Image 1 (cartoon, rainbow, N blue to C red):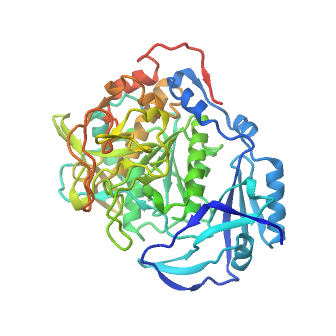
Image 2 (spheres, rainbow, N blue to C red; image 1 turned 180 degrees about the vertical axis):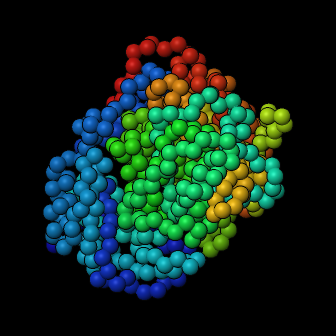
Image 3 (tube, rainbow, N blue to C red; image 1 turned 135 degrees about the vertical axis):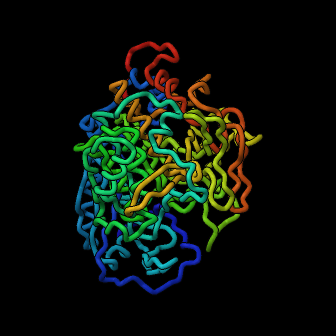
Length: 534
């Protein structure tokens, strides 16, 4: 037997409270994804430096340039294919651009290949495979393997949509855009990628909704099913459908001429990564914005998954893609009480990824088309804006000087920005044949996505990775600073809002005209020589 190496980032713990059913059928055929290390890793420092410039002063990479500079080494692909043959696995869907190889084979062969044991478990009515501990691989491929995803297919994330308790105070998405004074634009020639890990949409319901909010009939939404996902029956899961329809309706109403592409995948770590990866590397649709409204507390993911997401988000920055993610709906706890609930602070993943814009929630009160007050969204047991300090990602350079409460950040601070997320001051939606008012930070990600789509269309360029620019010196003018409230939730002490950045609403909610000026390069003079992606 060849010498083997332990993949230290692959450590998996059990699902708290899950019931063991027995060993997984050794003859059952499964498919997994190997994410490969690149020959030339993305230079994070150079990405951050480029992102301090206004988008109009940057030049992003093309897909061909990305493939040329940041592909997996040929020897890595050859070694993985040989490894697959040695263990009776089939290497499929080799994608040099995405640096992934799909492996298909029997459970027994997968267990031998990675020295693990797969067992079936059940939790909250869902059956899944689970593994524990680390994985190993032969020494010859260990340097090339960044992540092994899919052996364990436990449910990995949850939707961040919430229903209103107090009805009648909701807004249409256009009304929220007007409250924040979004720049006038229809988002023409732009494409948004929306990531979904469940649910379905219905084009007839969407047509009815867009007509009801005063918009012309728009182009049909494009579904993309990845990593073995198949269409769900609309109405089979009303909660997941509500998430999907909320995302589409918010982004689609704010940018009515933008193309909407929805990437559906299974709710596993493999499915989540594959949906995100397909969106970032989609040559056909070429999205300029990715909106993610699913997640869960960061420690529930393996280190390899967190690393793979961070590398992918940094790659999106090279392509000029803005990635936005909901910061969670359970305040500083980022957990729903139940089996395994820890009364401690957590932050949500993938919002915690430094190269993703984390979107928190506020409660907005308006009169005659103007905001009269805006506070942290915090409704006790009914939810609160997710936010806090990462225990797995370090402090990014652009957050140096920020503090959570009285203490300087010890890790990545979440969120970066905010917007109307309180379901009780949320969004009028239509799904499964009925009107409903919804909110949650899952509404804030597509809200900001619609804003970026509008700005992209206005400037005829891609905003791309915006976070370092947003945190630049004297940038608070680009935001409505939210200084009242906290994100206490489920008995876990939250963080207090304060002037400047805080761990409830980040830098604040958007000031549309000021952000447009910032991204246009009008807020501060620069040498106009374009910054080129590394």
